[in-house]
Image (cartoon, rainbow, N blue to C red; front, side, top):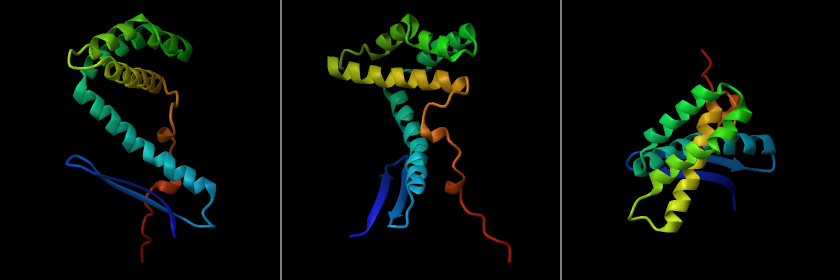
Length: 145
């Protein structure tokens, strides 16, 4: 049986097929680069889906305010994003009568991750593998004949 890593998404708004054939010659770096490259599309789709169920603009507004007040110090930003302002807006965003306690908790966790990633990316702190520029994953240019 051939070993491979495959990711297939086929929805109205998203078609993505990524495959990597794994052989004895496949080095760990190739696997690492392939998996890291998946993160970009996945992160974008998680955030897009999150924006369909809550008003991310409200959280973005609070984050912009925090970033304006805190400057570029990552330690200060982490403290503020974990603070009262963000918690208050997250609690407001998940307060939907149709959601059960577990659903509210789950969505609030997604919102907290969204907030931290967005705030730290804003000050150029790498927070996940999808931000790494992977030269091997770019399309190879065809040689001129």
